Length: 405
Picture 1 (cartoon, rainbow, N blue to C red):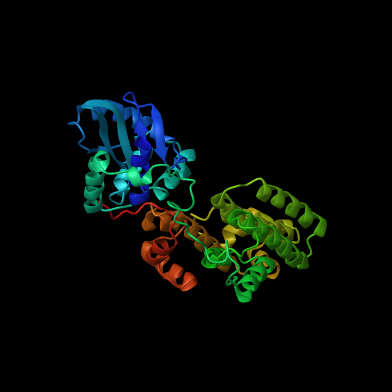
Picture 2: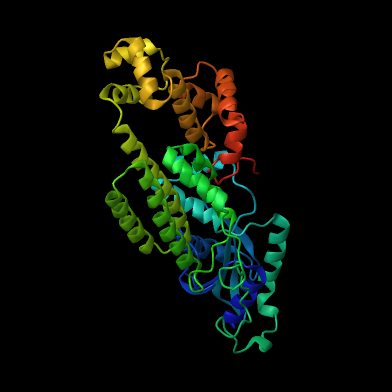
C-alpha cells in the first residue's frame, strides 16, 4: 500500500516523497531518482527520525533544515502501531534573503566550491506559497484513508498513466524550429575577429532559441552537436586574423573531446561560454605579439594599477620612454589613447564585478579607480548605455533574491 500512497502524492503535488523506516533508513521514494546535489536527504531523514516520533499519530508537521528548506513529516500507522515515516520535500516557501544566504556560507560550513551545488539545490526545489503547503499537509494526513483499489498493479513504468511529458518544441518532434538568426551569429563572429569582448554580454541571447532536433531525441546530444558545429565555424572565421590554422584545429579537437565527455546541459552551456572566452584570448594574444615590448609593458602596468590615478607621465616612466613619444606609439599600435584604453579597461572590470549582486556599487567604483561614485556612474552610463545600478539588476548572475521574507 505504501507504494500507491507515494504514487498518488507525488503525481498530485510534484513534491518528492520518501517512505522511511522508524530509524530514518530509506525504504522507497517517488520519484525513484531524486535530484539532490548536496546529498541532503540522508541528513534530513535522520532529522525526521528524531522529530517525527514526537508528533501526534498521523499528524504532519513541518521540518525546516539549515538551508531554510521546508519538509513535512508524519508517522505511518498500521493497526494503531507506528511502522514508518513519510517525509515529503524539499519545498521553498519563500525567497531566501541576503542575510540568510550570507549565513549559509559564513556560518554553515560550506566552501566556495560548493556554491554551484547550493545554487542547483535551490533551482531544483519546488516553490510554493504557504497556502499551498497547507493543502499539501492535508493531503499527506489523508493518504492512508484513500481508496487505492483502482490503482492496483499500476507502476511508474506502465503506459503513460503518470508521465506528464514536457516537450520542448523541436527537441523531440519534427516541427520546424527557429534557429538563432544569422545576424546574431555574424555579430559574434565579427566580434571575435575584432577582439571586441563586449559582445559576450549578449551570449544569453542564444538561449532564447530552442535546441534544433539534431540529437536523435536527446536534447543533450543535440546541444553537443550544436557546440561541435559552432567551434568548427568559429575557428575558420578567426583564422582570418592570421592565427596558424593548425593551432586552431588543435584547440577545436580538445574542445570537442570535452564536449563528448560532458553529459549534463548545465556544463555544456558553460562550455559554450568558455569557447568564446578561449577564442577571444587567442585573438588577443596573437595581436599582442605584434605590439612592441614598450606597449606591452605599458598595457600590463595599466591593468595592474587600475585603482590608481593615471597620467601619461607615470606610464611612460614605467616604460622608460619620453611621454609624448610613448603616447604616439601607444595610439599607433592599439588604435587608442592611453586615457581611452584606461577607461575601457576600468569599465570592463567594473562590469565583471557588478555581475555579482553582493558587490556594492560604491566599492566597485573605488576598486576600478574612480574618485567618486557619481563620476563612475556618469562614465559608465556614457560607455554602457545604462547606470551601474540598472546594469547590476539586469546582469547579475546571483540566483538568490534579496527581497524575501
